[in-house]
Length: 259
Image (cartoon, rainbow, N blue to C red; front, side, top):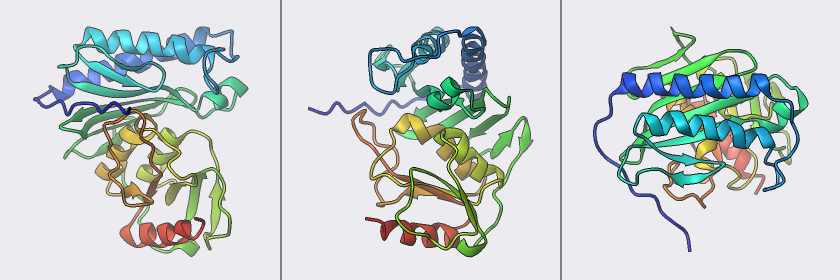
């Protein structure tokens, strides 16, 4: 039986949340800098030993600040009445394990089931993307915005997985870490990004980046037009993001042909 998370309401100090997220990301960075065992955890497929140590230090920072946590690695923990933070301690774990410099910690505060404060910290590059609902998006403290691309034939796109046909884009990339990938759409580095799997992503993979994209003026949704923020740990979605509504619809139409 699926477990549905409660919608946890109540005002949360945005700056306190941002400061806590920064400390949590710093704690994960320290763990990764000391990591010697880059192998599997032996507990779950595609989970690495450092995923668990990163999760532990990240959660400790969030608990100390009074948050409950919904983590990819450890599920739903903490005070059931506390504000809820969705966490992916290391998004792009395989990249990290192989020395590919593209992996991040993603944290997102949900209020009434919607994203309100977000941080994605790329531990390989040092970049940090942030957003607060209604206040715009930042990268390393500077405002960011999407590219403005409207035409798929002009677009440089990225994805998780592979398409079954050519969509007519200019170029494409597969980078291997959804949270920072989506932030590149928010920053105008990429024009669009899409999950090529049918429901391949959990909320922790994209919640933080979804807010960052939206606050940067980009468009993000689910390929199949489902609610992007299901408060159910068993649910999966297929996110798609684009600089503009025109590009979003063009990319989505081509993506739907793959089904």
